[in-house]
Length: 398
Ligand SMILES: NC(=O)c1ccc[n+]([C@@H]2O[C@H](COP(=O)([O-])OP(=O)(O)OC[C@H]3O[C@@H](n4cnc5c(N)ncnc54)[C@H](O)[C@@H]3O)[C@@H](O)[C@H]2O)c1
Image (cartoon, rainbow, N blue to C red; front, side):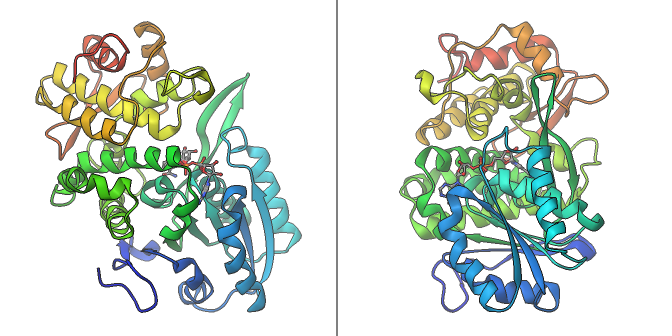
């Protein structure tokens, strides 16, 4: 680790290379304190004004740096958000835009998002639409947001349609000007959310070989005990490796236009996950009070289902679902789940996923533990094998 002076465990910044829209992801303990300086540097001058969008549960981390910005003469508008999926809404977007308008933010005045993926997504969308686009700084405070949501420029809110929550249905691509991932903010992150973030890291491990050396999953398996103990160096390296993988995928396909490969790879496990994460009654532990599944928990189940489907399609080796299940299980993530609806219902819910293409179902299956492949129109038997692999009492892996 070759960290800059003053911060322990800071890997070199990861560059997301997108021509004029390129930016750095800085990772390290305590680096939120650098925000005033970093902001001036990436904007080319200190901002006159800014709008901070703050996750209520990350406020203690945001407060000191916002005070420093105000002391430096930045006029700050502030919006505090409850990070729930129903609050990731057009109403919350309207609240942020209204505060920005009230503060008369101008074209170069940034939005600063401090929080998990929900706050980052809605703040990013506000930045993309206010005056047709102002800069956004992402300061992720969950593991999932550090390794996934804050990088790549996808922003959005959910849409309520006739009582149904359609996830991320309204959004835009809007790359951040800078990402500051301060690992000290993870000190307060509840264990369940921390482990949910590990599911996305493991997903990156399963696709890393398409864009990098493919060592990520092996490294996670070798380093897991230190990661679970939140060893600062292991955490910083985990985030760096995951961000490097995501950055390389995004750099090759910024707007998800490639038919196969590219950003579609990042959907590994997600077509299965999206079919179950909005079923309010599903619980990762069997205890009703733990329902519904967190996104990362649904992804964990989705990764195993995708590997099982891959085996059925003869794309994945027979041992892969077991390997994926073991590493996820060691993270105390769910690997099987009770009370799944029938296959027919699940298939219909998968078809409703917006990533299915042209009315045909599209899934991504892992190939060898390092790479993955898009499969269009998979036979329903392969999908059924996927669901059977995670249905409690009907396991085919282990
Ligand atoms: N834009 C993308 O590319 C992308 C990628 C993946 C996920 N997402 C979106 O991200 C969201 C999930 O993000 P998430 O997992 O970060 O969840 P989240 O934003 O819901 O945060 C999880 C919980 O942790 C709390 N929290 C945040 N930081 C904390 C801290 N430091 N200490 C204590 N509590 C803290 C939040 O208030 C919330 O209760 C979903 O809406 C998903 O659609 C977006």
